[in-house]
Image (cartoon, rainbow, N blue to C red; front, side):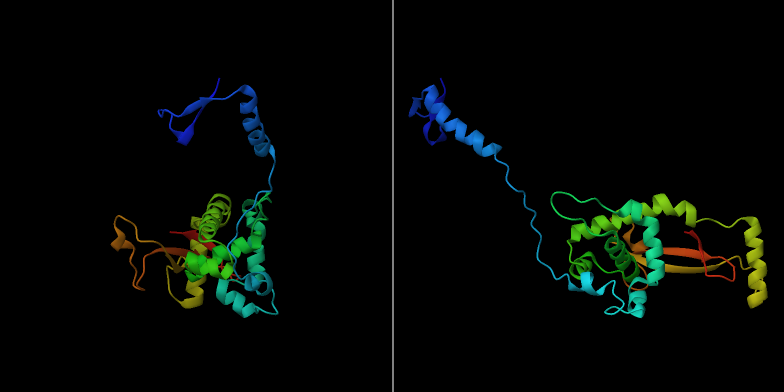
Length: 226
């Protein structure tokens, strides 16, 4: 026979036995209440979504010049990159809420790496949480490294290097130029070890990403990163 302890004290002197019928009267309502399915709720901190939903991808409210200055690429290049990454960064809908669209996820990633914007600034601008921004940056970085790097990032062959030398010699008169080099500082949190090595001349900690450009007369194409 089950025991009921008053005041939750199994060692106290006040206790009483209850009958099976009384125990059932207590247990059944608890089981029924547990079986009732309640609609699950997902709390979202209220934020302004006007810019990201109305202005961002509208040339009427956000001009092409503003778009290029913000993301360091034209709208055409943005959507070309998006089509390459979409299978790897697009998320499925869940019973909690709809996922952030893949175009907006890519915009968040570019806003961080091109402007060096903090997660808090991006959180306010794109109406999402800081942890969400962090996850998006990580997800798209992995997608680029795993699926695009081998296809678009490569080192020149000897033949390409010789062709590049001849091209730059004819164009500039400077001999022995294999490629043109450009770089960008990607802001990071100070590493716990050897942090001084990552402090740049601009006054913050970063990793210097560098790339070379080929010698064709067409649009420059990235060949390698260091």
